[in-house]
Length: 161
Image (cartoon, rainbow, N blue to C red; front, top):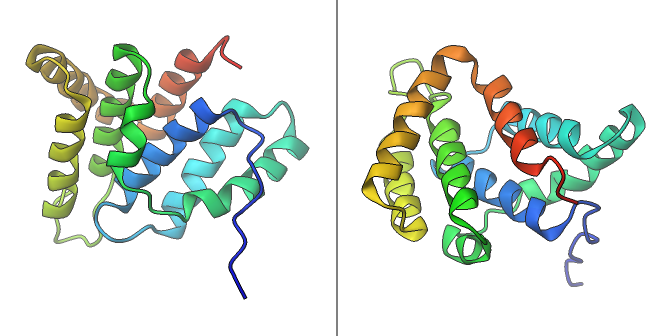
């Protein structure tokens, strides 16, 4: 019996691509913890749903998509502007820098560092833009990762449907 793909999501393809890129970075160390999944689903559902019932429905709907580990090479060509590529770089950096698998491991482990280098290469941003994004990301770490990511995503998608 063939595995059925999940039904199309209620968020638009543009929003879905952003979710998948963030998810791909979270998968870069070979693990996706329940906590990481819950945080991503909570934040994306807050952005794209109007009320609690819609948020719960959207979280359930997107869970199957978050569990898919899609290569960055398949996702980044769908980014449409430099603004999107910068946001993805920022989100990617934030995701990998947010936690470690164990207390003895650095926040960014070798697998995550390698995935981040690949992301930078695929996005093909000017070096000065990469430096600015990384500097901004370092400041964001002190302000609270989840809140900052939610703020950046909300700002980016405001007015996009």
